[in-house]
Structures are given as structure tokens and as C-alpha cells.
Image 1 (cartoon, rainbow, N blue to C red):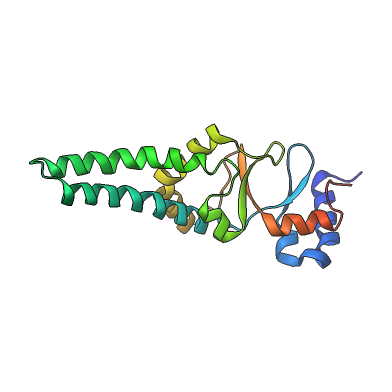
Image 2: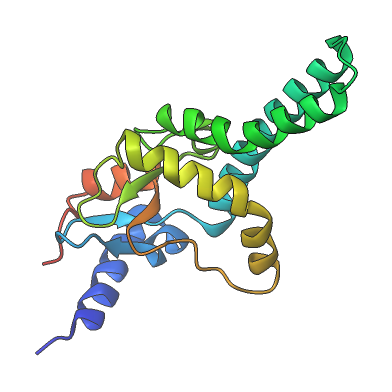
Length: 177
């Protein structure tokens, strides 16, 4: 009797001629049994970096603009409030555009954030929350990766390599045998 692990090793070996060694090694299974190719850790980190820089850059730009355009005596206080509030509000707004799992960072790196349960879209409500956590936690996540922790899933969502997953399925590898 083959264990789950032995089945996945066999499947990766069969898919290797189609995908190559690197992508075949990243084949995983959703909870519903469908197969996918997990995104590279580097691609995920780059996507998070792009999204982080976009959101924090917009927050800082709004604060700086207010500071220089305001005629208020307390312009620095107003700018600080705008910058801090922006760090919480902009990720939520940006996340709503991320409901299909493809923010700008994901588009640039060719990945998509999906539900581990079935590979489906994460939806608008969860996307805003996911973007908020990733934006505010990016520095902590990046430091963890630099320290050797390459865990990039949270138990409910994961990032897939869109191109390699399409190639996997086009080759007939949709579910484990």
C-alpha cells in the first residue's frame, strides 16, 4: 500500500519531464484533492515587497503632501495621523482589488493567492484582511525569511505559480491517481 507521501513522490517524478525538476518538486495538493504548483518563496516575497512598497509609499506620499500643502499650525500632527491611518486603510482598500488573488505584486511575479481548501479565489472580505496583515507584517515576515523561516502559508491560503499550475493541468495532472 502506497502512502500519501509515496504517491506524491511518484507523481512529481511523472510530472518532471513536463515541468522540469524545480516546478515538479513544488507540486502540492489542495484539501479537495486537486493539484497545483506552489509559488517559489522568492516570488512570494517579491510580490509582498511590491505590495508593501505601494501601500506604504501611498501613505507616506499622502502624509507628505498634506504637510507641505497645509496652512495649519499643526500640519505635522495632521500629516502623522494621515500617514498612520493610511497604513491601516489603504491595505484594506487595496485588498479589495486583490479579491481575485492577484495584486500588482502577484501580477509581476506570476503568482495568485488562493484558498488551500479548493484553490478558489479568496474573496473581497478576506483579501482586504490578508493585505493588511501582509503590509503591516512584511518587515517581520522578511526578517523571518532572512533568518531561515521559509513558511509562507498561513493554513488557510497559499500562493500558486499560475503558469506552472496551468502547465501541470494541461499535461493531465489534475488530481492524484
